[in-house]
Length: 140
Image (cartoon, rainbow, N blue to C red; front, side, top):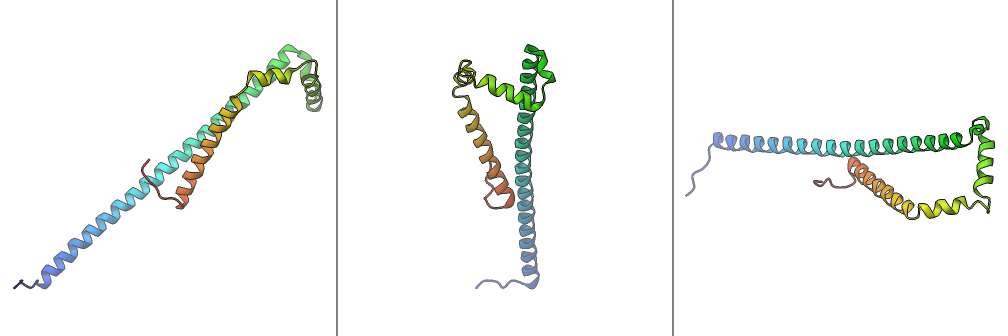
């Protein structure tokens, strides 16, 4: 016949069980915080990449404008509307074929850039869904 446990033994077992549960809870909270931190770091990284991309685009636009101004000095005196009108007339002149030449030079680049942008947008959407708790947080 099995020996009956005393009140003290039951209490001791219950305390051990409580300690194990508290340790598990503490570990789960730590893992949750770490996962949230990883998600936030990833979102921050994506945000930084977007800012770098915008900055690079702004720099490129300034360079292109400066190149036009360096070639034709008087363009700096044109208003924005006059400049757009001039560019439209020049670049869409059938004899010029500027747009056709540019299109041929950059063939395939737009698709590559768009695919990369879609990829980044999807990654950001997944991270935000994970942050809101809509998706399970697996180890990355």
